[in-house]
Each structure stands twice: as C-alpha cells, then as structure tokens.
Image (cartoon, rainbow, N blue to C red):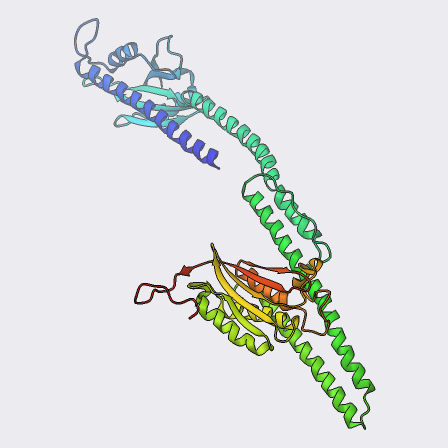
Length: 465
C-alpha cells in the first residue's frame, strides 16, 4: 500500500508537471505569434502583413517546435500550410484530427484543448487568424503528441511499479520466513501448553536469544516451575494430611465401636480419648490453614517494632508453656521492621519445642541481636538434642526427629516457623548435639532500623532495664 500510494501520487504530480510544461510551451508560441502579427513584416516587401496566409506561413517557417510538437495551418476545409520536413510530428497526416478541427469551425478566440484520434492523443492550441482587409480567415494550429510526450514518464513508472512489485514479492517471501522463525517460540509455547497435564509438568521451552519472545519463553518456564512446585506441594500436603488424619479417626472410630454403653467408666474414657484426638485434629487443621496462608503476600505485614518489647512479650508468654528457668541471654536494642504477631508466633513455637524436649527445671534461653544487616533471634534449650541426620528434615511437614513422639503436636510447628522466616526474606537454622540441647536461630533481613533514643545524660538505656 505504501508503494502504491507513493507511486500513484508521484506519477500524478509528474504527469501534471509534464502537461503544464506542454501548455506553457504552447502559450509561448501563441505569444510569439502575436508579436509577429503586430510587429512583423512580409519578408519580400517589408510591408506589414495584410493577408492571413502570409502571416501564418512566416510563423510556421520561423517556429522551431519542441520534441513531440507539430504545427499546421488550415484554410477552409483543408490544410494550407504544413510544418517543415524536419518536424517529426506531422499533424496534416492525421486526417481525423484535421476533420475534427474543420468541423469545429473557427473559434472566436485562441483555444487550448485536448483532442483524441485513433492515432494518438493531442494537447493543442487553435489560433484563429484574420487580418483587416482579408476575407479568408485561417487556423494556426500547434499541437503536442501528449501520449508520446508522456511515454518516457510512463516507462519510468512502469519500471518503478515492476521493481516495487518484485521488491514486495521478495520482501513478502523473506518476511514470511522471518516471521515464521520469530513465531516459532509461540508455536512451541502452544505445543508445550497442549502437552502439559496435571501428571506431567516436566516439559520446558528451549530458550535462545534476548528478545521479547525469549523473555516470554523464560516467563512461561518460570510459571511451569511454580505450577509444578505448587502441585507437588499440594499432592504432598494431601498425602500427609490423609495419613495424619487417618490415625485420630481410626482411634476415635475404634474406641467408639468397642465402648460398652452400659459402663459409665468406659463411656467416660472413650469420650476423653475422642475429645483428645479431636483437639489434635483441630490443631492440625489450624496449622494447615496457617501454612496455606504463608504463600499470600499479606501473610506478614512488617511494621516498626521495638526489639526489647518483642523479646519481653515472648518471654512473658513462654512462661506458661512449662516449668522451666526462662532467661534472656542477649538483647538487641532499636526499632526494626518485622511482623510482630508472626515473629512472636514463630518464637513461641520454638519455645514450645524447647519445653517438649527438655526436663522440668532446665534452662530455656531466649535472645536477640543485630548481626550486620539482619536481626538474629534464638531459643536455646538443654533438652535431648537432635541427631545430625534429622536437622534438616525436622523442618519438613509432619517430619519429626528420631526422638520425637507421633502423638506430640501436629508435626507442622517447625514448618510454620520456616514459612514465617521465609516470608520475611530470612531463614531458620539449628545447632544441636544429642544430649546437650539445641539452639534455633531466626535470621531475618534488616529492612529498616532506628537506634534506641539516648537518655537525658546522653547515654543509652541500661541493657538490663
């Protein structure tokens, strides 16, 4: 469309200019003829022109036609004078043109017009000539073969359109190959999407290059990674939940089937067992809901909190978990950005684990510090410790150490702690040795920090205050 519009527009302009040049040449010839008629003389006598035939004859002899231009003089119903032999365009030879001009008759004034015959198309000027005292008028005719004059222009634009068409075909072929290659990643994307099922998410797109389609392929692969991880976690969760809920359900069902309804003692024992198992199921469901929320963007909402206040709140609440000697062995000072509720939940879960695996009266230490660009929180106990092979798997869902009991808790406590740490952009680690206790560390990136205010004497507050 661009080539077509540009070509037609340019051709129209060039054709108009060519027509204007022909008209201008005809007008100049008429002006020269007028000057000759006014100031010229008969060459033989030196007298002014008195007969139209003499004036037209001299004008024809003195006029040098342009290329593709011819001239003649008509008198009555035929040609009186014709152009010299050197003039290529012979108007008198086109009888159809002569007949058209004769049929029109002498015009009242100079006429610039178009004429078409079987021979060609003309752009011509007809000058009526009649001098005073001469009763025989004549027609002085100058004409351009407009078809021949425009032939070179037409030939040029024919070549232009032929070259444009060839270029268009070539560009279309090359464009088709290029677009086919560019769209290959989209075809691969469609084929991969069609081949993916809930049981097979292993296929990935081959990525090459750095363009937008390559970025799309990488994004699609990342999406498949997330979907595969989500489905794997979902299957694992369903398998684990089914396994964990089967035990309390079996216990409740078995006790209900075997209870003696006439024995109040047996009924009371069965009721107590059922309530205990239902409590455990409730705890499991609550923990599962917490883990399900951990993937949401609003799972943690960091706000400025005082590290001192956080540590004091954790210790105060942890005292109700068991008869232990609760101490603070490290205290960081300042305002940091953390989710107070979630971090407290994680610390209390670590405290509960410390109580679960330590003896009455033993020490459980809680502390905090600022370690470079991170906040470090920890809980240390003097319990049974953790075997080296168990230190990583205890953070998995429903995983327990070799010295843990299947009946203790939901098996999701440390998984929740890890989820809270990850939601803050941090992690949780453990240092432990069998028989010498364990220390769990929460390592949380420092998003914002403000040092504690100084007292009136210019000193920081007492760390033990």
